[in-house]
Image 1 (cartoon, rainbow, N blue to C red):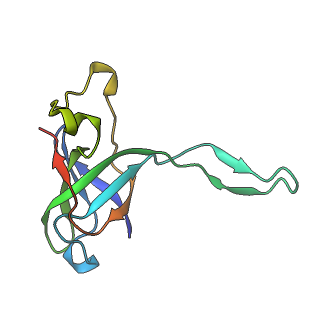
Image 2 (tube, one colour):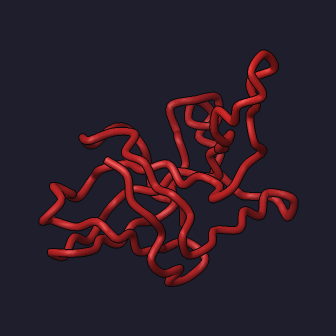
Image 3 (cartoon, helix red, strand yellow):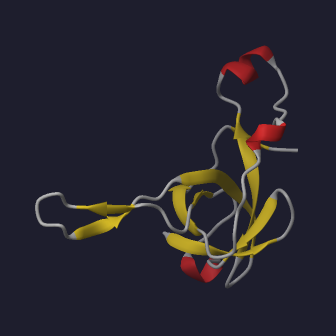
Length: 118
């Protein structure tokens, strides 16, 4: 399932343009991708093959409406930080800019062992 960022609500919350009518349910995880990446060209034919898209961050849906859903950024705690119970604290260099129109793509359709960032 693919959609787009429709609104950036605050530093941790965004609205995607897919909702219950598209099958979105709470707990779904979407990757937010850059809207425009570098062009990939076939070296043999010179034909444009597409654009490279990079994932900016992931969000988890927590509020679903018929035509849109609200989602928050979160932190994967199934790693080193979770083992030591060290809280996640983003540094000043970890700023990610999300823009209206950025592509969102379904990563997980069920709840997993992630905690929402605070």
